[in-house]
Image 1: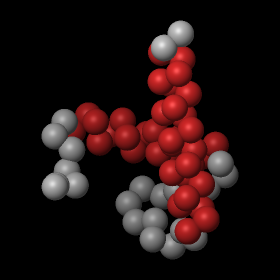
Image 2: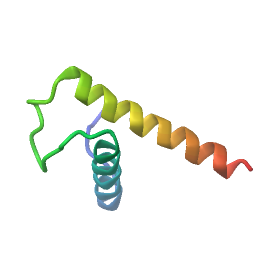
Image 3: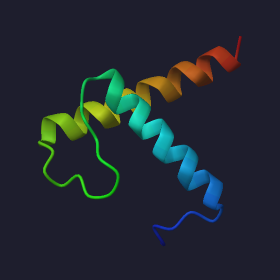
Image 4: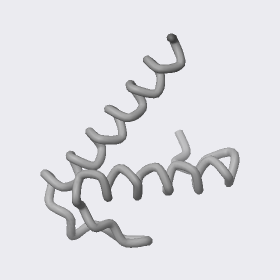
Amino acid sequence: MSNKNVVPEAREALNRFKMEAASEVGVNLKQGYNGDLTSKQAGSVGGQMVKKMIESYENSMK
């Protein structure tokens, strides 16, 4: 499976979403390479993204 998004706008939206989630948990993401993040920092960003997706889904079901 390819790591490329089919729709370029989807990649941009996902990047904005990731930056927003990182900001909310106090992780300073840079554009481009972020391999210097700790596992804890990266996990907190991913966890925040999942939390926001679940909240969005739950709100859409109301």
